[in-house]
Image 1 (tube, rainbow, N blue to C red):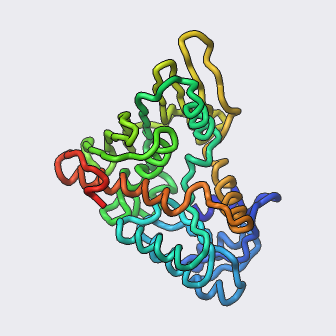
Image 2 (cartoon, rainbow, N blue to C red):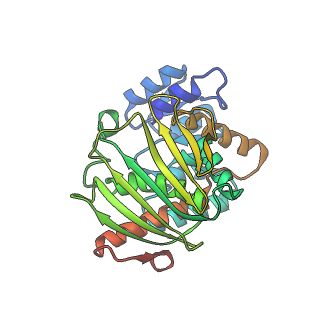
Image 3 (tube, helix red, strand yellow):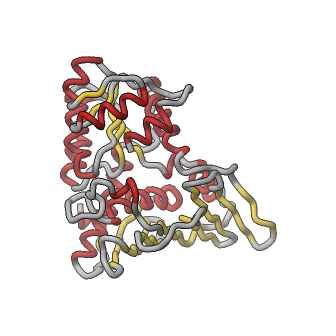
Length: 322
């Protein structure tokens, strides 16, 4: 993710922020990414802070390293953009929230879906009543993980950062919460292995129900309908594209032809939007699109789903799991 951010966001002529250093515990990796941007690489955040006096840190690390890195960056007086999930435990998430509050610094979370035009357009159409009353939502994230995404093994191993629920669950919880509001309860069922296939049933505060399916055991499609919102007078399908610019939100009702709500979009466009939002928040003092409270709410659902898996699929109320 650090390499991707360097290439897609920070190397662009209109980059929303200037990179002054890269950091990696492996000096060769820090130097390699730094060379993409013409900046020095360091083996620790402390060394970088002492040398170049940055304003902020963009943290692209394995899930289980987020909490310690955010705390270190805040202690150094930096604003922080951190990858999802915010943390891997509820205690760590609470500690981060309290540290952010005390620091007075911005903590934003690099959660893609709320920054996508497709998701924003769908949420606006739902709020405007264009599909009538919302009755249900569904999401799917289905592909075969490989390549750079499994390079270091932490996503698919047995560690605290591993498994599809933690890796994809906060993504799609964030997506469905943008469409349907807060989740109050969740139950989960594993596929052949809970590490690579999981299904969730979600109950929302509004009374509607939702379902999510995540699997790493099937070939990906060029454009996948990753979410559908069902209303009393229509539906909205949210198509996400990773290799093309064909992602769209399409509204369908019985009495009119399908309406495309957005221009074509590539999923990875959201990375530049996230960094631009982070920079604007620092400058203007407004709230980020995805802040600590939002990210905590997403993580709460995932942790409750993990508890449901451990307890044979029992529905877990979020207030019970807190």
